[in-house]
Amino acid sequence: MTERLGEQHFSALLVVQKFEPDALFNADQQARLSELMEMWRTARDQGQPLSQELQLELDSLVEAELLAATARTRAIVQP
Image (cartoon, rainbow, N blue to C red; front, top):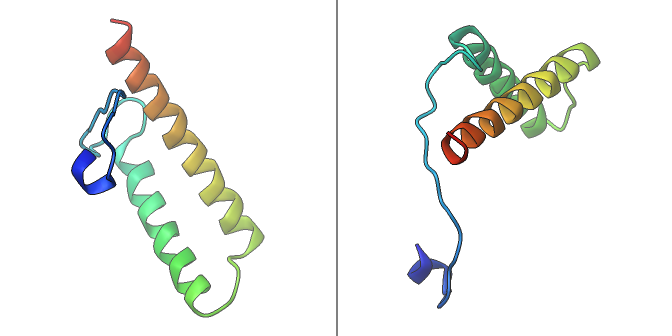
């Protein structure tokens, strides 16, 4: 990775997790997030926004996944 980035000194912890359902972000949430992201991409490509309701739902799921990812990372770093 550092070769590709052209970095000579790299001092970060890199954690790669599988994007699988868990207690923090379940399968239904993942499916809905995927569906909403596809809708968002389609709207973007057509130069249109999502409806306010769908955008709020998408934002909420993105926030929930971010919080879940943060909690997962915290669990790894602080067992």
